[in-house]
Amino acid sequence: MGLAQVQDVLTRLYTDAAMLEAWLCDPVAVLSRFRRLTAGERADLLRLDRERLVFYAHSLRHKRYNEVRPLLPPLDVVEETFMAYARRHPIPSGLNLATADARQFCRWWMRQPGAPRQALRACLERLQ
Amino acid sequence: MNVGLSYRRPWYRELVEADERPDMLEILAEHFLEETIDQKIVLDQLASRYRLSVHCLGLSVGTPSRPDREYLRRLRRLLERCGADTVSDHLAFVRSGRRHIGHLAPLPWTREAVDVVCRNVAFLQQTLGAQVLLENIAYVCPMPGEMDEAAFITRVVERSGCALLLDVANLYANARNHGLDPHAFLDGLPLPAVRQLHLAGGHQAGPVYVDSHAWPVADPVWDLYRTVLARCQPRDVVIERDDNLPTYVDIMKEVAHAKGPALAHPHPGLPGGDVGPGRRHHPLRAAVHGPA
Image (cartoon, rainbow over all chains, first blue to last red; front, side, top):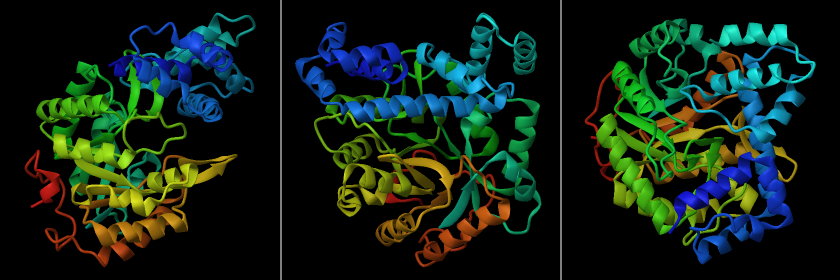
């Protein structure tokens, strides 16, 4: 029985956009990477509603953005940049997940071409 | 029965100074775990005026691995500081290993998940010295399992001795999104174990009704609330609002509205309403027998 593996699959589908896209193309191939799942667990996972799964993953990224938005610099491109970041980067651990996520996002954005480094540096100092 | 409010920072001044007050407050643990000076001051001010109930998002009771030790240490200190005798979280998982989802995800309703939740509840009650209340969540994409949700909740309550936090708005959202009969769902629940109710407002987003906590409590939820109150006797009812916050005056109108039906069903053990700030009840009291 593999509750931990089932949750691992679900968590990745919810938070890893690349894995969700692979799932939508070929869920059986994605599940073949998770060897400890029972046949029943595989069958249950394959019964997940695809449309609702996509809706949920998308709503999670928006919720995540809403959590960190008050902590970020008020720049025009912050939302679309955060959404691009959130598709590939899971929320880091920490007592306050929003603060940890905002810090990680600012550091990631600093490394991107054309990033507003001064505003991001000020934000990181404030979040320390 | 007490009707309270889920604490949000913009209402702090009025909560401390206004004459019109909720009976109790629910605080979100994650807002106070960093233990900053500001957080401690706010907490002490609130605890001196209200009985506080502590609500969590991060325990992840459905995850096989245990919560972070530092999180638990700070949560225990928080419970002690505000004199809370219960701690609530959701019948859900929010992480797998160290990967966080950022929100509540539904568990597969399986026997293995029942075992995991019961093991975690026992561990948490022992570690925290407080009774655990578990809340039904709203879900968009349920995971197929071996039983229905009501049967899953019943098994968890009967085996773990935890109490239930019945979120009426979540019940409504699930009924609306998944075509369930909320009354049949209530029939399947161990209603004597309900210790607290949550009320909140959501909105329709495309094909899905989202439990966003961003709007006033909707009429169908008030109707369901009256039905629930006719069938169980919770100690507390809490109005939740996370986004699109109204003024204190307006949120207190919702508290007053909730008191209407609540006053028609006074709690047998609490004739005078609130038990006062900071009073500790005996931890781990079996919820199925109700509070003393």
